[in-house]
Image (cartoon, rainbow, N blue to C red; front, side, top):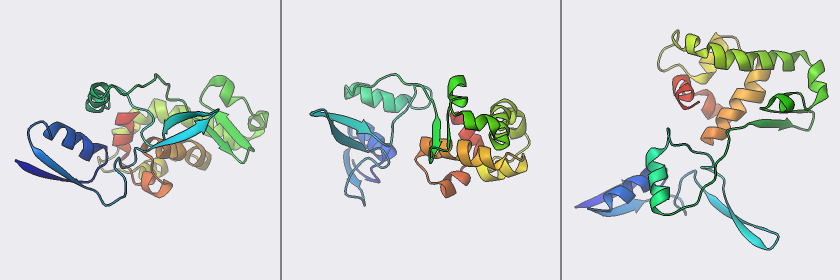
Length: 186
């Protein structure tokens, strides 16, 4: 059986991988490389080439079981990681996701917007399950943030850059992302 697959992102490559065991598979890709947003660059550091994946950096067994099976089959090495987050804006506004990291820049302690952002981080993760029951399945992140009145500082310096980093998406796209899907992942 001949099968054509359009697109060589992780879904296209995974499909081709599994179907190739019993079918003749052809992949069509408009870009010059395969992989979609998964993209590995080789960096030379100290006369040693280090492959760095800049698109598909973090994955886990719950959300990516089939992808992990492919990596295991191909004997691709991986390392454990945490899902930490840090933010730096012109070195005037910096923090990271640990208690010490939240207090690392003493200037933040005097900023009322920073206090509101921290409050909203806790509110977002603690109360959102309750909030999610009040929205439709197609509610976007932007609609959710506006409906439940999250602060501009929280939006701009926490949830939008964090979600954008996870899905390799620009701000405009991540704001249109279904909020329930975001929470399923988180």
